[in-house]
Length: 444
Image 1: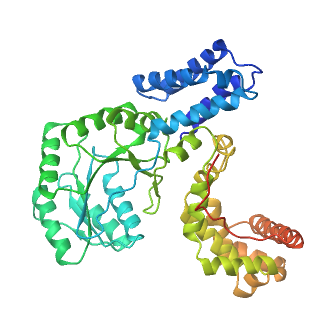
Image 2 (image 1 turned 45 degrees about the vertical axis):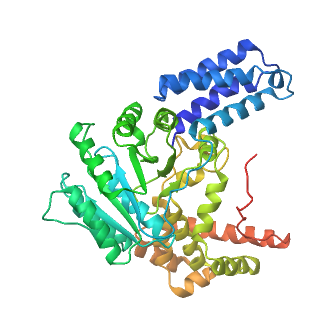
Image 3 (image 1 turned 45 degrees about the horizontal axis):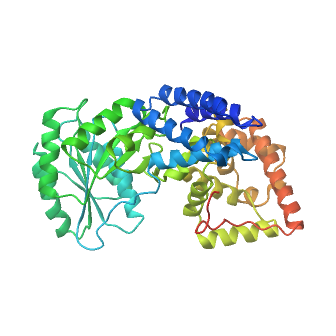
């Protein structure tokens, strides 16, 4: 995510952080390079200009010019301005504590509205909301079928009138259905077009006037760059929305959309979608995104992802096994499944400070986790709990059963043995294994 933008910004900042003294001349050279990087990333011209002007004004202050570490201060100024540009603080989705909450999704065709509606439903289900998905896209072939399939995956009911091609009727009748069936949250998936047109806007405006949504969210493909900003502006002028959702953030996004869209329409980004699976939705935090863009990682989000997958009792049992050196292949398999639920390996590693920029050309393949799973699942219960009995014949059988080579089986067993040795060393030094608490966790 945004690797190209991050790499270019890091290169531009290196020139000035290596200077012993900061002058107006070298500040101007660096900011000129950063401006070029932003424009190459398809950031709106006016947004890029205003951003550079603000950074330059603060960078030429006495505090920076007389600082012992001026390069670090300038990086901090850019971080603060990026955070401000992205919205400064996170914006929670507004939900009615009692009565019906209606969330209407708008956007162009192909931006990922239908997939996002299921992701949002799953996100709200995890927060104890009873969700109804509404198939109001009556134009795109198989849109209703797609929503029904996604709804069945997350066990969320889908309201659809298959014989009707009236999206306004479908949207309004869904509210009565939700009330009758004790559902307190309605997510309406509306139709889009390949480009902005009057018919789409009139239809969206009519649906909005009839259902009076609690929140209207504009869903946009983050890979469309400046076009996304232009369509957001058109939608907001004619329909008016409360927040923005950026989809396909795990793709080849140059970054222009995420840095421009809020400044142009003055509406907060509420969510970012990081993949195809229904559990790859993240709340948007401007400070964390600014940290990622500058290559500083996002430790808080990484820890929160881990905590979301760890049951307190399981974590306690696991810590006890670590301390007693009883961690076996069954436990290892559980950890792999938890990691897979957290997201792709590349995205997780990118949250670690200093690692993201090293991953651009790295071969980080999630399929390796599948290989490990298949090897462990080809072991008997006895072999998983007591790896010492894994002799040559057993390893050959496991290789055949898992469809892997004997070398891959040997490599996994060796890595597991090395991990056990490391645990012994940590235990000798009274090391403990537990997840950190993020309640008061802040990045300086």
